Image 1 (cartoon, rainbow, N blue to C red):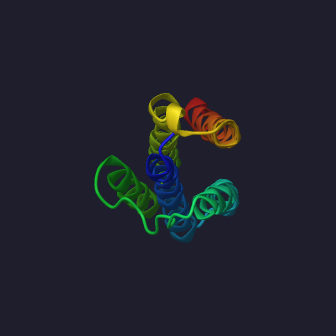
Image 2: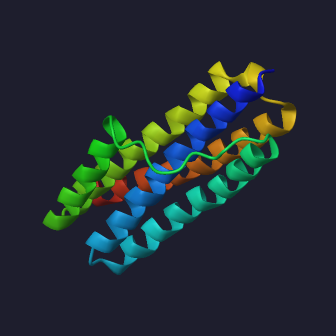
Amino acid sequence: MEKEQTIEALNTLITINNDRIEGYETAAKETEEQDLKTFFSELKQTSLHCNKELISEVTKLGGTAAEGTKTTGKFFRVWMDVKAALTGKDRKVILNSCEYGEDVAKGTYEKVLENDQKNLNAEQENMIKTQHDLLKADHNKVKSMRDLVMAN
């Protein structure tokens, strides 16, 4: 197990959680609908919790936790779509964009679990699997909310 590779894997997860935090902060600010503000705040809390654990683990390994977001690539464009959708007040578009963002976050965790397992000890792997389960639950909430809007 290479410590640097472990830190890199954990920092990948910190960055995706930073993306989620920033995305849901933006979404909460842009919407006028109180139920969505509350919902986005709950989703943000999941990533704040995950990051607290991840940062603690990186620090324990003697590394420096990643800061900021991944402002390039698909995830950034998703949050710009969310902002545009919120401005247009289209709940379905908002929730579709959120679900796509949740897919990206969930997929990032799955890649780390698949590709970096050899660099994780049992405790780290368990922490990441538990966090992945939290993100899957958030994804399912977003999907259910979106499906409800689409049914109406």
